[in-house]
Image (cartoon, rainbow, N blue to C red; front, side, top):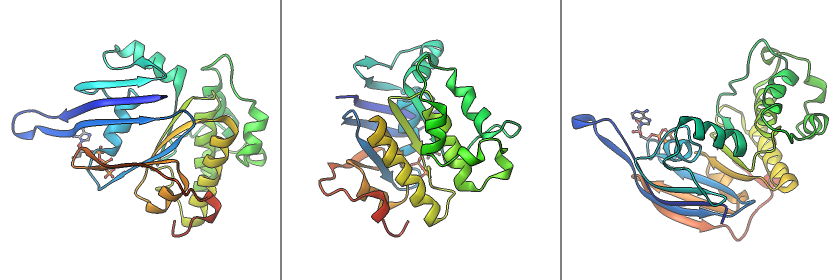
Length: 233
Ligand SMILES: Nc1ncnc2c1ncn2[C@@H]1O[C@H](COP(=O)(O)OP(=O)(O)OP(=O)(O)O)[C@@H](O)[C@H]1O
């Protein structure tokens, strides 16, 4: 099992403002799986993703990535864990405005001794012709493709995506999902995708639904559809 989560608990605040957001999340994700995490607004999806990604620390429980426990790591160790294993994609692309597409990707290329080939990645993501442009010169979909390239250049084993299509129109969302599917097949990247979009459930290997800080549904999708056939995005 690539990702093993056991009894993950996380709360915010204290006294009257105490809010237990995650009340004991237990699940497993296999290497190479694409998995969506869904649930109502405020159910704890981003909190779960942030705890897995070492962007936040859980109160108790265990997260093992490729057999390595991450709970209890200090800030430096978490930083090294993120560098060595993870790629992040967010709803808003967080590109550096005064760097070109290629330079935005290059800043992450140096995080590993074994990056993917830049030209191949630019080609895969349809960015070759845009590589010398600045973010402000790109459409939302092109900016998100650049953010995906930046997350992928170091060939992360685990890609954490928080609403990756949240700011995009239906057609561009589908293009991005087709790309994520291609990356999953080409590089075997394990992916966790937090999304409000129910249609995305149809293309992934595994679905996790969170309700009130607990898992209410957790199942493997036996009848996956290719991303290109998804409707209602
Ligand atoms: N840093 C924080 N401090 C205090 N409360 C927080 C913090 N981060 C999240 N919360 C609270 O935790 C709860 C879950 O938030 P979270 O962002 O994980 O939900 P979500 O399921 O991702 O929601 P959405 O779909 O709206 O993005 C919310 O009530 C939120 O207000």
